[in-house]
Figure (cartoon, rainbow, N blue to C red):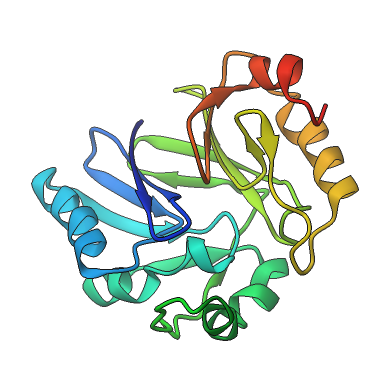
Length: 210
């Protein structure tokens, strides 16, 4: 499985495209917020001759869903979200107004993410783990073949996701990371929702929150 990363919108949110030799792809957390950012994603999909299978959301904070409308207008694919995060998803327009952000609601009704079943596309398998705390329905996607984790806003290089936002829970996030992420092998690479990549081993030993 290959991973293409863009850092987008005023929050420098990391949007990821996962794809493999089958030419199938999934887009994770589309944060594109203007025409130039839309074009960067669409051009890459076209240049690589990829077929977009769906959109997967780690969670529904505004910086992770700003590009849903432009992408689903171009590619009418399903969007998957954990149901616990619908309360955040359904308030996205109000949140955008509060931050003064440009946001065109997609009005796409997300489909329920099946954690136990995982998700398969092309020749790739993703394990889904529930890691709440930053958001009530936060999940991460793990590809064991490439030893990679699409971690959203759970664990960062030297930090963790904010828990001072609505529905945040610091103790729950710490517990979730320990049980769902730190149980993975040390060499697994973490692709976070913001900032640079890191790995499980480094965060176990040097992250100040642990």
